[in-house]
Structures are given as C-alpha cells and as structure tokens.
Image (cartoon, rainbow, N blue to C red):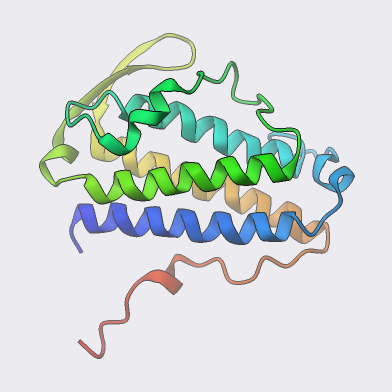
Length: 180
C-alpha cells in the first residue's frame, strides 16, 4: 500500500467511525450528551465538537497546499474556530449533519491527493499564531491520528454511558489479500 492509498484508507476509516459514533451518540438524551464527564473536552458533545473544530482548522490549512484541492475550496469560506474547545453545535443533530459534510469533503480531498503532493512542505500558523513549516504527509498522518485519539475517548465516554459502539478497529477496512 502506497502513501496515497493509506491516506484514502484513513479517510474511509474516519467516515466509518464517525458514522458509528454519531449513531451511538444519538441514542442518548441531550442531557447525557452534554454532561461533564471530566474528559479533555468535558462531555461527549464537547469532544465531538472538538473533532469538528480541529478538522476544520487542519482542512483550512490543507486548503493552502499548492495543489489547490477543489474538494477543500468550501472549507476556506467557513469561519475559523475561535478555540479548540469551541462548541460549534449545541445539538447532536446539527453537529451530525456538519460532520457528514466534513467527512464527505475529507474523502473527496483524500481521493485527489497525489504522491508528489505528499512531499510538499506546508507552511501554516498554529492557533497561537506561531508559524511552522512541516512535511505535508506527516501533517496528514497527524490529522488522522488526532481523529483516532479523540474518537477513542468518545468511545470510552459512550461505553461509560452504557452505549456499545461496536467494532472500532481499522483492521476491519484493510483488505484481506489472502485471496489475491
């Protein structure tokens, strides 16, 4: 599997896992979703909002790549989140609809990345305004790893609330090549 195939697989995993998490989250009443569970971002809803915030920040950065990805043009028009703990959506329905749009954008973007694109050094400023220049492929790996990290926290919070998310392993999406 080359790097672009890996990026596409991670985009597929992102979308699959978010669908599972949101389906599980929608089974809880609003007060359970908003309850402070002492997680990094407080509640289940706070954690899911953080993922949307962070993905928006990173996708806005990725939209400045010299490849000028058409799939990321719409992200440029979205307002930049004010903080990493910003609650963009106070209800699971609105958050879920926005998450689905982001996941579709991520899949389209991932499908358009070429191998040479991944070797670019991308310049950006972090949320404190400090400039950085990093390898684009490493940033993309970080992007997907960050999602996995916080989805793991949400999975734990849902489990503690009595909701089983089911199988969450990336292994479920890696093709079995024994028949190939």
